[in-house]
Length: 319
Image (cartoon, rainbow, N blue to C red; front, side, top):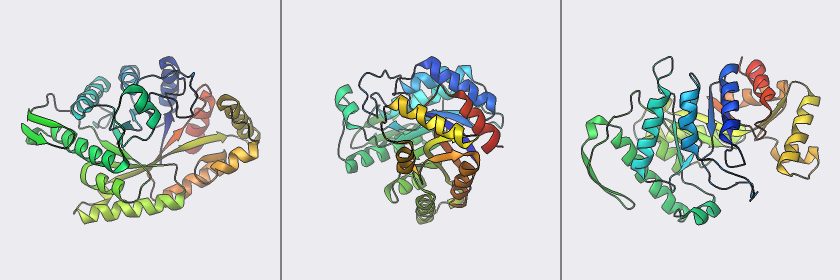
């Protein structure tokens, strides 16, 4: 199973902090480094600084050589579709191809959900049905802009209008598209029609199995080979080489996030969705995810100063 690290850049992370994690992730041999795309703290901590996801990824593209990079995920409400297409293509060129010739950059997209950051930064925040329509329209536009055989083209949509659209250079190698979400109907349907991968969010192995089945059914419905659509998961992770190491990491995380609950309460609230515990316990959870059809896991690392946990993951779980 592919294992990657995922960071929440809006929770006070500087570029230097993110870069240190990226370099350690690459040195440890993990698959990739992904980051959120938010402008305000998801945890509601008003004093925390935030970095722009795509500006950060552009820097990482030049300062790493091997790991996969991308946002998990960019809200469709933040940027016009042509801007997203051009940004991702540019960062992909800056990163260069992976060793196997594939792209090192993935475009992750979603509907957006944090209302407060939309109000604060002037982004539109419609009801969920409207955001899903916006997402589908943007996917249509971006995939057409990246298709040399579709150009030039006109597009008359609910949210964007394009005339004589031409996109150069078309990304080469092709940039894969990931759609993030926990839904069982609309998200799998969009992936089947427009994307390369579905990235589930904080799901138990049982729910992953359900979403994987929903994705296969959505692919079959549109005549697509179900095996051509990848399936990954983003979830929290705290792992220790020993139980003492694990408990120490949880206590540190509680201090960083201001969580005043007991350690046992902290763990109990996340048990089943997060990768938690000793190496053996984490390995068992990952095995259950693999059995559910999960091909890769992006491990949300909320204490980026703890580079040693990246080593534990790489040496004990990714080997």
